[in-house]
Structures are given as structure tokens and as C-alpha cells.
Image (cartoon, rainbow, N blue to C red; front, side):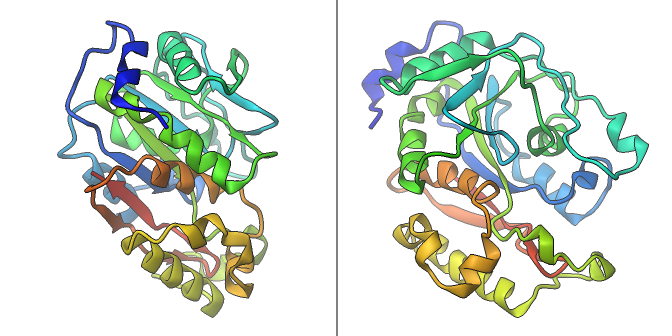
Length: 276
């Protein structure tokens, strides 16, 4: 586990700051990047009282890799990793700089775990579709940490705990996914129906919210052994695992709060989390 003594890893380029909060954003449809709705407003409101970060580290559901990687280029490209959407969405660019320095420091913090410095990925829509609402001027450096699909839930929770020192260096760490995320069962005919969820989706959301609010995280680490509602809500782990990075960064005495806590199209939840 990272201790305050590990702060010496971070160079003078990241001076000490007040402790930054931690977020999980339910990012939902890529269209949230260009639409104005209550969820987008919730993204903006969540950082309204937060000091502007020196940099952002995002764990996105859309960078699922063998092994752990971190983007290390100076200018990460905007990745349009989706299809079937209007051209206006593909035209969006989020030209935030990267931070090779932060990438290297992240690599050092999690030693002895081997982390690859990646020059090929960039910012996928799990990151930029949310961050563009938080910092629309694209003037905060952003890096991404990938999710190693070969590792169990406990690995991801533990890896996050090793990143604690970054919170004291002005780095805003966020997870981006969706806690309830079953695309195969999306009810497109009712996509715009307010807070509409199938019974199993509502059950899963309410159960998970209860665990979150009571700080009972072991069932969330054992998500694949919680029964049918969880199995339907989390048919694949990609959108769920970013949540565990956020939870792993919570420190004793910190408060967890929910926002954007609604269902969409039957089988998706937009539930988002702030820890401070």
C-alpha cells in the first residue's frame, strides 16, 4: 500500500496541494459529449467546488488490455472508438496535452508491477466525453491508465491504492464506465424515458448503492458471485472495473456521495460517485 513517504517519487513539477477528491463517472452514451442534459450538468456540477487539477488520470472502460499501460505521449489523440453516430460526434476533438512526466511517475508508484509507457492509444470516449464537460478549455493534462483484463477484481482495487500519493500532487483521478451496463438488452425505443430500468437492473443498482453508501466493498469485489441481477447488470467487467479503482482510492474518514443516479434505457445506470 502506498504511504505518504511515497510522495518523494513525485518530482518538483507536481508540488504539494490539498488532497484532491476522486470520482467515478457513469459516462453513458457517447452522445453525452455533444448533448446538453441532466447528466452532463451533473458532470459539471461535481467539479464546481474542486480546485483546478494539475493533471487528470483516467481509468476508462474502453482501454482494456493485456498488462497495465499508461499513455505517455505529449499530445494524445482524440479517439472516436464507436460507430453509427452522427458526424458531429466524430468531429469532436479534445486537444488536452498529455503528461509524459506523470506517466513515468505513475509507473514508478506501482512498482514492482510492470507498467508499459504507451505511445499509441490516446484519449478514448470514456475519457474525453466526460472530461470535456469538466474542463472545456482542454487546458489540463490528461493521461489514461489501462485495465488489465487478465487480472481479478482485487488486483484493480489494490492497484488503485498504490496511487494515493497522486491525490496530494494535484492529480484528479477518475474512473469512467457504467455500473449497470448491458448493451445487448438496451431498450432503444424507450431511451429517453426518465429513470427507466428493468426490474433486475433496478435491483442491482439499489443493492450496489447500498454497499457503496455503507462502505461494504467486499460484495462489490465479489460481483460475479452475487446472483442473477448482478450477472445481468455486469455481463462483462469492462465498464464495472473502473468503479473499483475509485473505491480503492478512498481513505479513512472520507465520504462517498452519489449523483446522476438514474437508469437509462432499461439496462444502463448513470450512477456516478464523488469521494472526498
